[in-house]
Length: 398
Figure 1 (cartoon, rainbow, N blue to C red):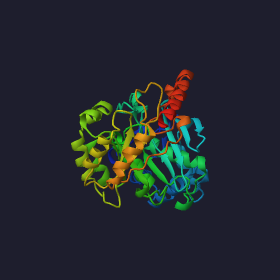
Figure 2 (cartoon, helix red, strand yellow):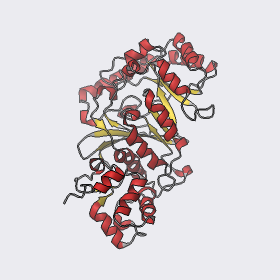
Figure 3 (cartoon, rainbow, N blue to C red):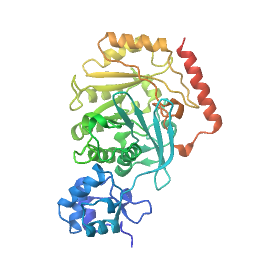
Figure 4 (cartoon, one colour):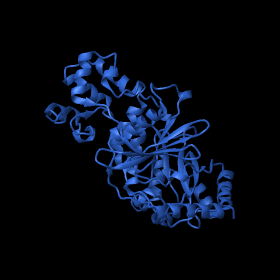
């Protein structure tokens, strides 16, 4: 019997796509990622009382338990019934890499064989988990390694939230710890893919992450990064109210068209209007604009002055990101002197513009370097990366 065949009632009331929550063997339902309201209705339809949802949720997302027998506050009969129809699964780890700077990267494999990467970046006052939303990417940003990999598919809610749960497994962060003792204090939707082109699944996953009776991560500690999918930005702000980061990277449409083709669909004027009206944006809660420093492309003093002008009236922080080379990339990083000049102009105008410290470059975990290991680099490509990195270091000293 295939337990995933939904009843008519389940299909109507839950709109639960069995394929999205299938176990690895395809015979049961993986509970991870199912929205709380849907989980409650599933249990009620099977004759269980409402309080069972709260109990089960606690074991799944507060305790992080993966075996029903370990859920000791549940009756033996309830545990047995759960085990007959459901499982609690994480993505599998194909490879785990650790950088000399402490950054960790996991290559995660799903039952269909597709892979994504998840990165943990430790800092003195926080630990940030960079989570993927798609296998490959919808977009083809020219400076981004992920953009060279075609979109394979969207991740499910289970696969999005599963990245965080697996990372917490790795750090032993169960039960859910207090804020001051967490290794993972922040989540950024800045991994592979464009989150707003997979909004429903990403939103479902983030609601689980923010649930106070489970993983319990504050919305103030979650940032969603978009390349500028304008129609979905307001919806994201109204429904999730998480922090917003915008991949800007250019100050005029011609330049942005060339490096970010999405600009042809949603040009700068529309994108900036959406930023000005993003729900909840204030001087105390600014939008972060990501700006990769590309030599001779977008890094002139005139570009810096135009950046200040175009963001006037938008509570902003600008992250200046030194370009991280990857084999086959057509760009070079701006020199350290050029970046410093650009930064000075922006900051003297009263806008915060820190230069992001590159982390995890030796394991291809830095910004713009993520790509599925299913297209793993050959040795010659790794050698080319090392050469490009050395050249960038030399150029940065000019």
